[in-house]
Length: 380
Ligand code: SF4
Image (tube, rainbow, N blue to C red; front, side, top):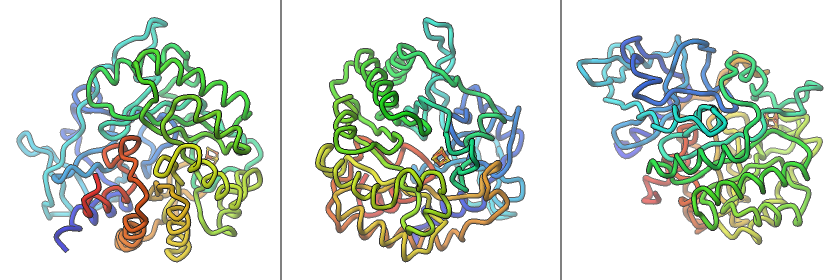
């Protein structure tokens, strides 16, 4: 159907990956925004030394994550001064790389390039990873889809330790430039008290440098231990919080996320979301999932339950990332993702949960289809 054309194309591009000619990539990293691997690597193959776009834009403004795959039938070529996406010999549409933010090359007062501290996701989301470490790798209990350690070793492109004041300065520069609308903060799993203190200091610095009273955006912390800790995150001044539950089906969750599920059970997550909605308000809490590793039935059950609690959902489209335990596997088809996300979007739409787009929107990242499916229903 015509109205689903770009949703279908995005699903295909995320599942199959994409290629681009050298000419098409010529100005990526100078004029256009390049990948900087702030946390995970989403390409099908590593590309050390080659600048690739982080994401790109389809004609209806849909943002798509660039996932390099040399074997993909999808390719972007430079034709005249237009970037043209083709599948095999068939031309599909013009696409646009995203302009590189001017602040990327600015240095902080501690002489660090700002791009190594914060990066833009999509068009308008300023991303800070405050801790590139996850304890689950040390005993081989990492989530099967995760490539945090291998990405960090392969690219080593961002600062592991960031000065608090530098984070505030980067936020100031990014918001001043005009495109940024929200922040996204996350880290691996570590000591709760230390994490809360660190996030409190980071938000204090962002508020001081931007003038926000409460900062539009989302914190994705390691799972808090209860109401008190959630309240402390609220008190930092961030507007929304998310919980990376990953998989709804309980047995699959335990199998796919062995370390994480040992620390935080399925029911713990449901409880945390319920409590967080009371503190942050309906629509300001997110359940974050990896979509494509469990059956449609259980994924949809999760969407129904999370929205009944008054929370929103961010489901990332899974692809087999290099360095993860599932490297070399295959994701479901693009058609499966479209069919499943359309059903999910009906549930979200009918739930009446506030869309929360001031904290996270369809322009924030190119690896989820839900915002795009909701846009078709008029929610931007
Ligand atoms: S909790 Fe899982 S997904 Fe998150 S960083 Fe650790 S291994 Fe990766």
